[in-house]
Image 1 (cartoon, one colour):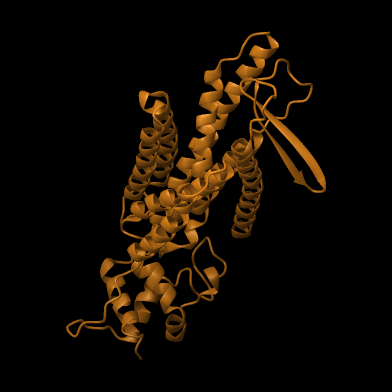
Image 2: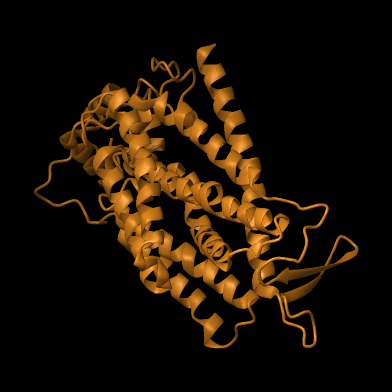
Length: 397
C-alpha cells in the first residue's frame, strides 16, 4: 500500500509540475518572441517601442510595447507570475518526494560520500539557496553591466555547481540538483526581481510619477537569462533516464556542453525572431551538430576487445554477482521496500534473464555505476569490472 501511495504522489506531482511548467515556458517563449518581433512604425507614438500584428485561431491581434510605461494604467492588466511560482513549488516537492524521501536510494552514494539522509537533505537545500545568492550577486556586481562577461560568469557558476553536486551525491541526484539549481535561479528571478520591478512601475504610474527605466532594464536582463537557461533545465528534468550523462566520471563537463547546446539553440530562435539573417542565423545549427557529436564521443565508453591476459569469469560467477547485488529489486519477487515489481520489468532470476538484459546491466551497473540504487548492496568496483568483462566477452555459457 505504501509503495502504491508513493507512486501516486510522485505521478501526480510530476503531472502538475509538467502542466505549470508548460504554462511558464510557453508564456516565456511567447513574450521573448513578441519582444524580438516588434517593429517600430514611422510616424507612430514616440512612446511606443514597437508593435506587432498576429493571427491565431481565426482572429487577428495587435500588440504595442511602450518604451517605459503608458501614461495611465489600463483597467485590466494581466500578470504572468504564478506559472513560475508553482513550477518551482511543484518541482521542489517532487525533489523532496523522490530524492529526500528516498535519499538512501536516489540521493546518497556511499562511494561518492558517506552522508546520512538528513545531512544530504541539508546540503541540498543550502546549495540551492547559495546558488541563487551567488547568481544574484553576480548580476548586481559590475560584472552584471557587461553582457558577455556576465554570461561567461553565469556559465562558470552553473557548471561549477554541477561539479560540486557530483562530489557530494549520486550521479543521478547530482544532475537533477544541477538542474534544480538553475530552476531556482529562474523562479527567484521572477519572484525577487521581475515582478517586484513591474509592481514598482505600476505604483509609480498610479502615483503620477515617472517610473525608473532601470527597473525595466533589470527585469529584462533576468528574463533573458531565464529564456536561455530553459532548455538545459528541461533536459535535466529527464536526465535520470539517460545514465550516459549523469553516470560519466566527468558528468559535470557533459552538463556544461548541454548548457552551451541549449543556449545556442535558443540564440538561433531569438536571432531569427529579431530579424537576423546571414551568418547571424547560419552558424548555430552546424555548431550545435558538432557539439552533439562531441558529447556522443566524449560520453561513449571505451570499446576495447577483451585482452588475452584478462580472465573472464564464468556465467555462474556472473549470475552470483548479479543475484547478490541486483536481485533485491530486479526479481519476480523483489525484497526492496520501494518496489513491488521489478523496475522496467527487468528480472535477473536466471542466467538467461541476465543475458537478455546484459546491455542494460553494462550501461547501468558497469559503465555509469548508477545501479544498484545508492549502491545499497555495496557492489564493488572489482565486481563491476568482472561483470563488464564477462558481458564484453559475449556473455559466454
